Length: 107
Image: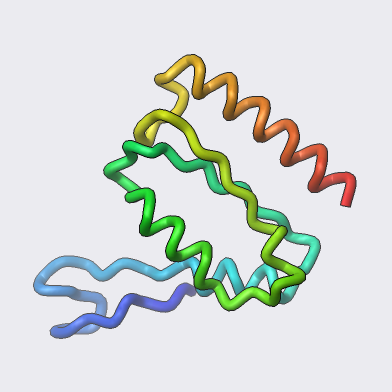
């Protein structure tokens, strides 16, 4: 289970709304436990569902040793949350994922 973002009020609640898990801590722990684990984060510049800088912040604050930071790769696309709706971005995503898989399997 992931850590929960600290809240006030009833457990699992934030101002009457369900709290959110903080999965970046779990992801960092998983990479430290298995240094062969690689992660690709596809980021749309105009994503309102998972805000761009929130993702950047979380991925940059996973307490990874410098030798493991290369296990997290990012792709940036001129799109929102649904990258596949922009055909040019979709092709770039496909190329980026293919390169990521090739590199990850090769390591």
